[in-house]
Figure 1 (tube, rainbow, N blue to C red):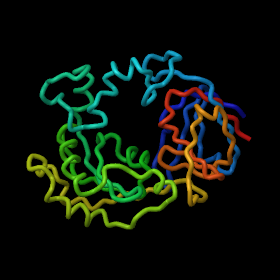
Figure 2: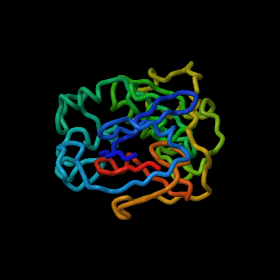
Figure 3: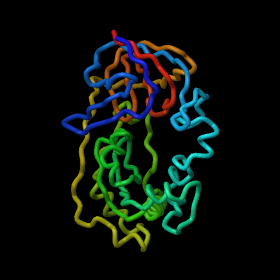
Figure 4: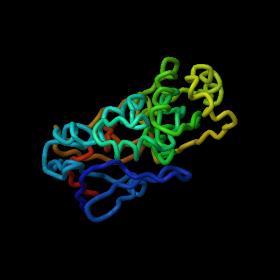
Length: 265
């Protein structure tokens, strides 16, 4: 069986274990059903996720021109504290920025390698946690806009990480930490203007299990643009990574906008 696809973030569904779906040109592949099968991934070219042209991908699935023009990749995406839509100040497209920034946002703690703090739109819970390969997560603050979430993250990352060690996450090298206890320790560092939004009584820790047959003690990242073609036995999916038997891992999201041919044996 062969499938062509312009790679984009895998779709996920939280259940007893996470279900993963890859959008191809003519189907949705349920990757859980492909565990134990041999996949060949061949690089075919590029298609910008914004303009749709066959231009070399620069970052986040966008060509160079679109990356520096599109409102969807403004600096406030990666740095929520730079959000200004609540002040009626435009970055690239105020209407778009209001649509995204002026919605309820969650500040959370997640355990993927060690405890990290993060920000996401409320509608992206638990998708954001799954994309980061978190095994546990808890909401600690719910605010009405992205800016307030951003300044909370900035304050708390002085005391906990704000990034995941992808190597540890993929090796399942995860520290055992109590998220509720950590939340209580961090409460004092939340900015004064955000403290009214602290979720005082939330003890709901979400636990997430991934479809992984076995973990490797070392991992090596696949650069499909450089290698052009790769063949391996799929043994797991975690975060936005495909895990193969020879310890190769492939970050699907980091290769958004790449056109590939996937052959299944």
